[in-house]
Length: 318
Image (tube, rainbow, N blue to C red; front, side, top):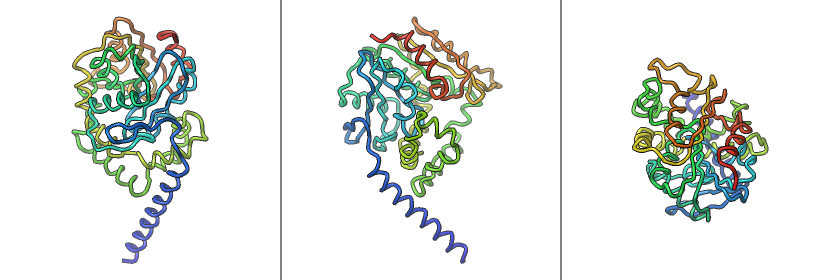
C-alpha cells in the first residue's frame, strides 16, 4: 500500500511539473510566422525569402516543428520564397479532431496559404508521408502546381508490401502503442524526453540550430502523438489509395534514400525495392530526375547541400 501511495505521489508531482512547464513555454515561445484562421483553428505559416518562385514544404508524420525541421533547406534556398505551413496538429498550429484524410489536410493547407497571402503556382516539397499529399494535390488542383519534389516520400505501393504493411494501423499493435504514447505525453510530457535520450536526433530536429532546442522540446511535449497525428496514422491506407488514383502531369524531382537507416537500405522478402520504386515513380513524369543519396530517411538533414544544388538545377529560380 505504501508503495502505491509513493508511486501515486510521484506521478502527481510529474503531472504538476509538466503543467507548469507547458504554461511557462506558452509564455516564452511565440510563433515567428503568421497565425492564420483555418476553419476556426489557427495555422502557423512561416515564410523565408522573397523569390519569384515559391516552394511549399510539407513535413513527415509527427514532426514536432516543421519550421525547424526544414531549416537546412529553407536557409539555403535564399533565391526562392520558401513557405512552411505547419499543418493542424504540428508546430505552433492548433490540434484538430477533423479526420486527417488527404482531402482535409490539403484543403486546410491551401486555405492557410491563401489566408497568409501566398498565391500559386507552387513547387511542392513533401517529406515522407507528405509525398502522398503533394501527389494528390497536384492531381486535384493541377493549375496550382508548377512541380513536385519528393523528399524520400511515401508511395502508395507501400500498403501492399507485407514487411511494411505489418506496421500499419489495421494491425492494431502499432496504433495502440502510438495512442498509449500520446496519452503519456499529454499527462507527463513524454515527448520532451526524446531530445534528451537521442541527442543526435535533437541536433537534426532543430535544423542544426541548437538554440532552438528548448522550443523543439516544448513543441514535442505538446504535439507528440496528438489527436491529429494519431488520426493521420490511421488514415494512411486511405490517403495512399487516394494518391494512387491518378498521376500528376507536372515535373517531378525525386530524392530517395539508400542508407542503412532507411527503407532503401532494407532487403524486402517480397522483392520490393525502395529505390527502384521511387525511380519508377519519378519516371512516370515527362520531365523528371531521381537523385539517390546514401542517407537515412531524413535526407534534408544529412545532404541539404546536395538537395539544394539539384533543386536549383531542376527548378531554376526565376
